[in-house]
Each structure stands twice: as C-alpha cells, then as structure tokens.
Length: 347
Ligand code: DX5
Ligand code: ZN
Image 1 (spheres, protein in one colour):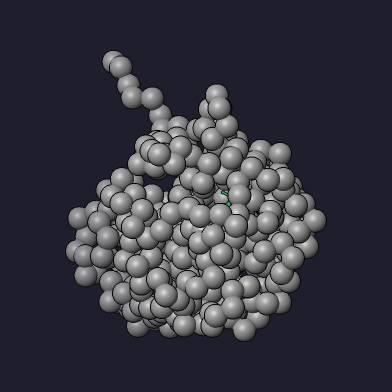
Image 2 (cartoon, protein in one colour):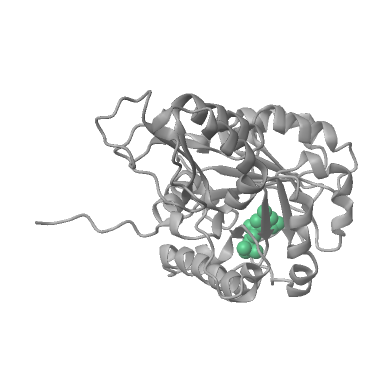
C-alpha cells in the first residue's frame, strides 16, 4: 500500500523555533512565499515592516500583511522597524499579526503601543538594535512577551551575524521575561544560519529569525529549517543544559489527577498564573467509569512543570483532599505521564 511520506518536519520534537523572514523572498509573489515556507516546515513567519525613516529601506505595510493572512495558517510575527508605530498599530492588529514587536529606540512613547498590542490579545515585543543596551527595556519589563535582539543593523537581509552582540545580550535578555511563567520568548534576528545557530541555541534563544539563508538559490529550504532547528537544540543541550536534551516545547505532562470539579478549579487557578492547562480523562480509571466520579488529568507544558509544582503543589494536595473516594490516590507525581491522547475528550 502506498503511504504518504512523513511530514518533513516535526516541530513539536524540538525546542528552538524558526521564524522565516520573507524579506529576501520574491516580493512580487509574496503569496507564494508564505505558502512555500509553510510547506517547507517553518514554525512561523517573520514580517519586516520598514518605513524608510527608522531604517533606510521600505517594505510592506498592514494591507499586505492582511492579504497574506488569508494564505497561510502559520503565526505572523510582525517586526516594525518604523519610527511611529502608534499611528498604525490598530491596522497591524486588525491585519492578523499574532505578535507585534516594536523598537525601543523610537522617539515616541512606547508604553501605549505595547498596551494596545496586549489589549488585543497578541504578544507584545520590544527589539534592540546592536548598539542599544538591554537596560533600555527596563521600564517596560511587565509589558513585554518578546525580547528581540538584533544581531545585524536593521534594514537589510543578508548581513553578517554579530557574534559579540549575541554573547553580550541573548542570555541576559531572558531576565526581562522573568515575570512570565510560560510563553515569554527571546528572538534573535540577523545573520542566523546553520553556522550561527549553535551559538544562539547555547545562549538560550527561543525563536531564530532566518531570512537570506532560506532563500539562497538552489537551497533545500525544508532541510535548512530542520538543520537550523536541530543545531540550535544541540547548542542548547551541550552549551547550556549540561548535556540534557531540551524539553520539546509542545510536550504536556500530567501535573495532577483529580475529580472533575477539583480539576476544573485547579485549571482555572493555574491558567490565571499564565500556565496553559489541558484536562483529559485519566487513563488510570476504566473507560466506562462515570465522568463525574472518575479522575481527570490536569496537564501543563513540560517546560512550565517546575513552576506549576512550585506554585501549586499545596493547592493540588488541598483539592485532592476534598475529592470523593476515586480521587483519593493521585498517581501523578511530577512527569507522571506525557503527551495527550487524542482519543480522550477534553473536559
Ligand atoms: C533585518 C530584518 C531581518 C532580516 C534577516 O532588518 O529585521 O529580519 O530579514 O535577514 P538575514 O537572516 O538575512 O540576516
Ligand atoms: Zn526582522
């Protein structure tokens, strides 16, 4: 029997994410470019907006982004290299950007724009040019979900990676996201390719923006994306994580097994702290058992498990003690099981 070939990439098995910049694509056929990067396995699309004022170059605006939005299901990270983002921020949000990152060096007030992005439920980012110190982010700590570090001067694709800037800033960038238990991201933008991915991986980067390395003539784009992701993960494992493989970003682990009302209460409280939660029928109880009596697994991302244990272990124990007889034994210690089973319905 003929089988479909396996997908060319398996993003859930890696930690590093690749955001394909379409700056160096064929600008006369951007619809094709976004469909292509999706097919070739990128995790998201990085869209460089330039106003000819903040940087000496012009690219696309919100209308182009809105038109591209209909062509792909991938998340859009907008990188606004513009002097006055406030003026058009609603247009970028309406265009369907999943995250919007602005520059900290602009002359106008930054806070209202960050607030507008967050009010729309999107991730808000701040970007620093190579010569800007990270301390410029200090006043905005509580308002950002993304710290983007430029390792080239903004304005053009295809420039050389500034390793010194990466070494000086990438690890420290994480400190500005320390208020986020889950979901904060450090992005690196400029000169990222298979030769520089190991270093940035070893500096803990979450999202690698890759432009010209993907569009070089004759290059196998899918392979390049896979390689860059894998090399960044290697860098992380051996440069930062004592040889321990990184936790794949999408892996979920069972944090607690409780009867449904208590499981729902715990879900609400954990989610309020910024950690996403899934509820599934526990496989510890027989499938025919009544939903109101059986246990439900409370799953959290493996990468946020330590934070969940630290903040909610006592609460979990308290909720277990109010449960009925079937939930009295909680088999789930940390990392009791992983993965969600599509055959079990969510609560
Ligand atoms: C430069 C842009 C980058 C650019 C990166 O101002 O912000 O996103 O596309 O391109 P490469 O990967 O070629 O440096
Ligand atoms: Zn960019």
